[in-house]
Image 1 (spheres, one colour):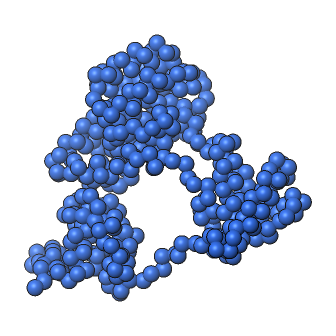
Image 2 (cartoon, rainbow, N blue to C red):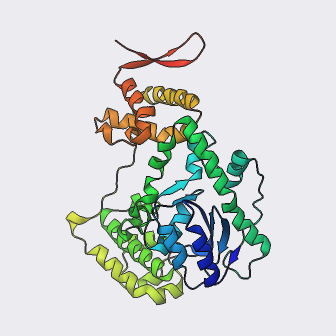
Image 3 (cartoon, rainbow, N blue to C red):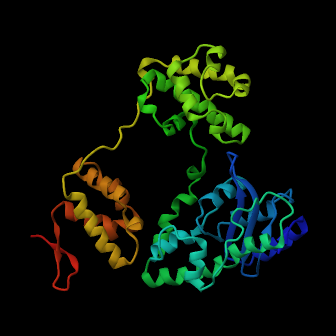
Length: 387
């Protein structure tokens, strides 16, 4: 069903009232804009599914009220971008959320599994991603495009049900809730702090503290303009040009014009504001100049990370999930670093939620010398207590 009128939307939303679980997806375009340009919202309940056209519909209130209902589980595949769109439309987070990509990783179907592979694995259905590069904001949409979009929620519901069975069988139902907790936190979807955007610029470590302060103000200005214009930040002024301005600290628009890669039209439009940003950075008191976080160059004691990695591999084989899901090399390094630097281990990621019992506590016992690794006669590697 393709919904383009208020009457159709009201009727469909009434049918969703009886559903405790909704499969949800969106189609969008975001090549040149700061925010996603929403083209379709697809929803499936127990009585049917539809593609809702947010371009032809002026008021999505009935749908948004359904999505905000805390008694209905909203099922997504790779939820992040869909939720960014819907949270912005709803003006709030929309818990509870279930992410089939996360769940698939936790039952051993592979990390970052695509939707097509998920459907094949869950229900044996082969679907063709023939409209991947469709401009979903162009009208009219073809019937093939509409069917393609609706299939994303039509097959998501049975895949969700299959994953629930698998999670229950493996006693991992609680794992998913812990992994998607951030999808239910408003802070996850807050706009980035403009004052921290300079940290994303490469080669900033070549700058002195005073120049860093200027770069911080320039990047904050650019971020705010990108939001107001709804465009990519780098389309306003490239990173390389911001770095050059921060190095030279120009005092007027004429000096600004000589910066390479800075479009003359942008100089005319924003030159005065850029000079003001430079002045703000140049006026920062010495004791308030920015400092960069230290790069993680810490080297742990030789062999410790290899020992932990071997144990993670053993646990992954036992649990039949990929190492990247349980504890990747970066998290192993962080865990060993925390231990050697005598930081609070209870705050570490691997000692939170389901990972604590599954991997964090055994790793901590290894580092404390309470257990060791042995090879059984069968060739399996196992933990052994150490007296």
